[in-house]
Length: 154
Ligand SMILES: [Zn+2]
Image 1 (cartoon, rainbow, N blue to C red):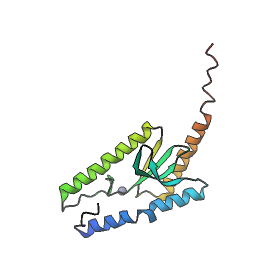
Image 2 (cartoon, rainbow, N blue to C red):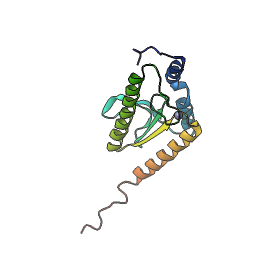
Image 3 (cartoon, rainbow, N blue to C red):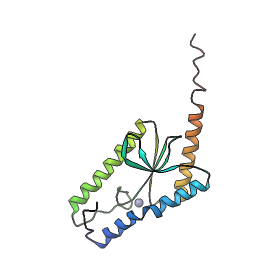
Image 4 (cartoon, protein in one colour):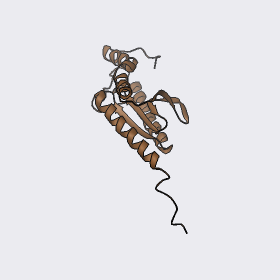
């Protein structure tokens, strides 16, 4: 994406927002999770797709958290279509969204729980949803094997 010069101030602003993503909602969410006592990995390679990364990952509980930029990932509320180079942008954004779906499906097939959030959501809301999902997955995985005893097999 560095090969294209932003063609309007609007595009330029969106690009720089993306570049500063790490200091925005994602960082706020990480701080809240850490304060809540959760421990996680960041920029964690997607299992089987090492060139793709999870923003926040809980490998033990197999919970993947992705915080998607509204512009790059096509948020229905905020995505806008740049007018200059419209075809190029349409294809670029379509590819991003197809890639997102592919990553999600790949993770689900590998037994992960996938949580995707738009960057416009309040960090508190995102962090609460992540905490709930991680707690639930830990409980579920902790029980595994205990309830499925083949004691009635005889
Ligand atoms: Zn949005």
